[in-house]
Amino acid sequence: METDLIAWDAPRPEPPFNMLQPWQRQPCDDDAPWHAWRVYLMLSLPRSVKRVSQKTRIPQHILERWSQACSWRMRAMAYDNHIHQLWLDRVEQKRNESADDYVARHTRILRTLGELLERESEKYLDVSKRQDAIGLLRPEHLNALAGTIIKHERLVNDQSTDNVSVRGSIDLSLLSLDELKQFKQLNAKARVDDK
Image (cartoon, rainbow, N blue to C red; front, side, top):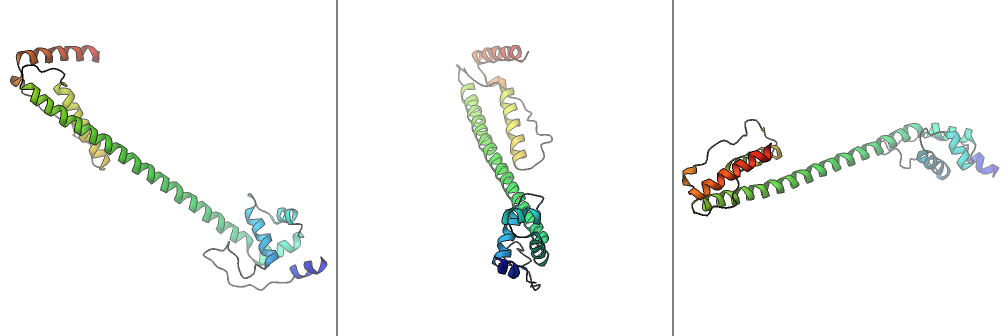
């Protein structure tokens, strides 16, 4: 055992480091120092040579020499920064995936609302020409729905939503007397519901 300590205690030359990944095995990392370095690297913060000595039973003064010769502190800091950057990249990736999911979901909703608006508009136009117009959305609901769809489409496409309101009137002269009565009843009901 004493001969092993003497070999471990031998001075080490200062070889070039892999500066892109200094936590990887370096020329100064013989088997025993490499094992000790891996123990040091995996310690919780704050790392210390004393804790490595306690875990490996290698004398602290030998570990100090290896630590200085092989720049353990610098290498551990580089490793910590690398892990932190990987974590940040993953967080950003997740955030982008969430944003993509959000846009896709809202695009589907907008498409469905657009189809509803088209269907209800067609229904309104078709039924408004007949005598028995029942079950129509009120024109102001169609207008509000159109405004909402346009506003959300602009938001999804990262466009301004200023002045998006939909204005216009519907020609009620095309409605039959029964349709006008139903329209009046629906308007009255909507006013009561709004209160």
